[in-house]
Length: 86
Image (cartoon, rainbow, N blue to C red; front, side, top):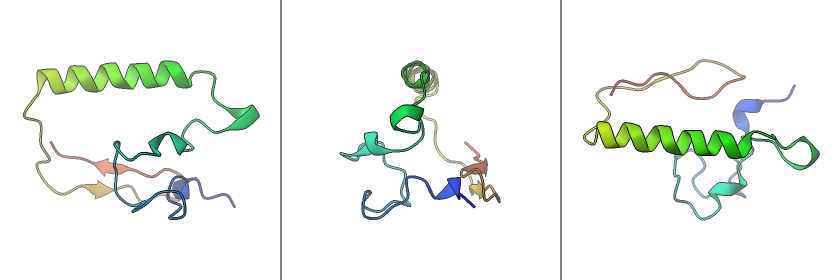
């Protein structure tokens, strides 16, 4: 069984892989859009959309902060928060 939730958590590739860090020097080496012949054709558009959405969110809510405990998703397929109070 392939464990998709383990992607991008290889300690030989990412220092402190459990920490979300967009500024790490090798952040581009993630597997979110696959690789090689299976590389996602929409990756560029997805990155542009994410950048625009995050910039707009932070512009409008400059004081946005974590406001409680993050509830992790209990899944073997998808990693991420189930609840993220801000």
